Image (cartoon, rainbow, N blue to C red; front, side, top):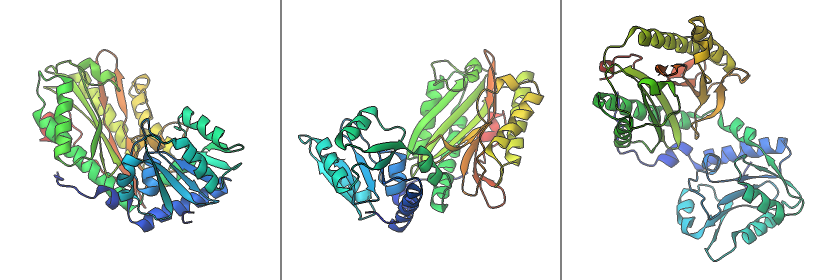
Length: 391
């Protein structure tokens, strides 16, 4: 049973430096056990992904070979691992009270899972699971143990992960620096005539050269494409006078940075300047409200109020921001109806935008950490339409 302008190069030992020592992992497990007990859970099931990384420091994948970790509050905890991943997982696991159980390709992993449930004394009990649990795995588990009850407990996991410790905040800082310097380097290379997808390739090259662990996305939208916020880069060539929206994300040690800037390739027109100025004002007003105790929806209202005042309300078509962590979108969500009170250690984006279909789009996105008295803005890039200002 488990216990209650900066260039970054040659970054090593990401996982241990961010997830921390065995003591910090044990502290997370103890907090999980305490919260789970209050909710009447007898154990939780973790899949490869952010929760497994957060609570055990393990980064692995699960394809056709199932991988899962059974944390029991009634008996021993164990983790099912394909034999070819055993050494990789063993090297990362920093706690001794989770038994690794490997299996070969000619073995039935679900027979082993049945034995794990029996040893964990979870027959007829309640097991907390992630909402993304595959239906196939759900039906297998229910069939293996009569009376076993599965309950989706994503709110429990997010509730424990939403406030970041100093290791995590530092990881966000490093990811943010890498991302911003990669954006700066890319904007030095952007020119009229490049395809949007060519700009994406430039960014990816720069991000990895600066030490990014991964580059999960890079949206590049020019001219009328900038009015389509989630459009992937296309073959469209950038033209003189286009607005160019760059929205990119990188990770360092598993933790995300997500920054957006809008620039003009050439001299901006009157409408472009006007819309850009409104977005700058809206973001500034939202930032002014970012401090402990303020509800997340108040930041959304602040930004949305500025945009509506200038007549662009119908063209602000998404929430004002989202939390960052081991996932690019997690709590807290900065939107109307979110009563979440901001607290020290929360990390999130503030990214108002205006999108005029067929004409243009503008979005600015910063990354914030809530501090004791206010917030730290991790984003230092200028907010300017002039590409020259990013040199």
